[in-house]
Image 1 (cartoon, rainbow, N blue to C red):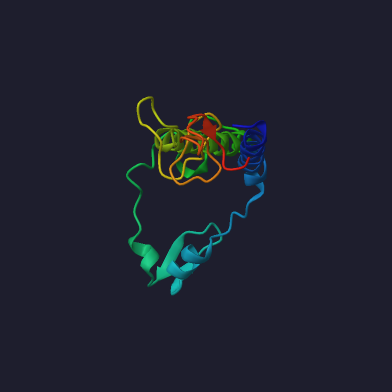
Image 2: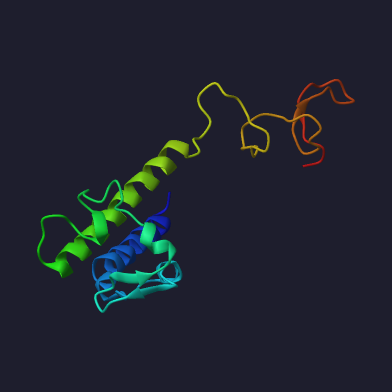
Length: 155
């Protein structure tokens, strides 16, 4: 493989790490469209807590993995929010890259193995010998004068 695709992959990884590690800290803290639509019909206080009304968000409960090390876009145990959010993003990108790279590595195309023989669509290389029906190939045919030297059809 040439160096060019690797440069593209490394460049993309660096951009993803920059976005996850730094830019993610500047994302909006307001609820997204799904959260907003689930809260329609409820009254919410200044801290975002539901105080009354009737809406689907009242049935929400904590996630089963809510106490995992990277829950809530942060690293458990780090008090610095900027560092915690950035580090969780970087760890997520690296984990995703490792899993994706492992899957691509397992599914990669491999060249023909010894003993496989020619595959359909393989190009003929010089020195592979004469091919049937190839008018430019040399063949052992007797000439009109009886000499059995290779004939190249005028080439």
